Length: 116
Length: 114
Image (cartoon, rainbow over the protein chains, first blue to last red):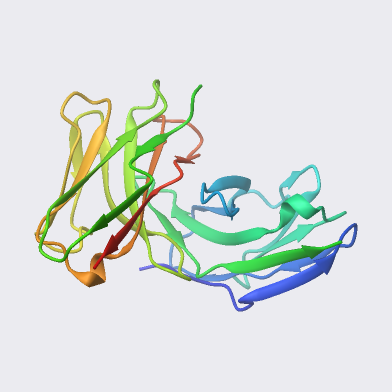
């Protein structure tokens, strides 16, 4: 079974600054996907970024980028130029490539507060 | 693309009552998922459908929980004889087969059992 751990329950950052959220996972699989989801107060889970484990290149989406360290089983999210609208819960999630059901295993989340 | 829709947004019920939640996925998505999220935790997988077939249901929390997707479109999640421990947010998500494993979530149904 896979486990996902987010060791930072809460973080804060000043507007326009950069913040990094940590995530580690445990799996015996070699092919998998990793995701970061954002959950604002509206409660809807929004996909931020996705990484395939077989790709060495770190994924980027505008101000969001990841640092994927497969050997260390680490998958951190960097948010650059933080904006007030980035305030939300952030969840790291794992999906086994061979999982026919696309089942996501989530971490416990990190609450991010962006301060003006 | 109108997104994943869930109804109701909030449900308050008394212990022992039955409740049913509805999810309308994105129209072209053939996969539909139910997750449960308790306060301060990440979502927990419950079950999923591909079209009308329920392909995984071993993660449903007890036999009081059941889900249907009769015509491969909308889905319902029913909880019978609710207990206070069932209080949580129930999230629905959908995806397309071969859709780069991207799940699109609804805003959830918040259940409170008194």
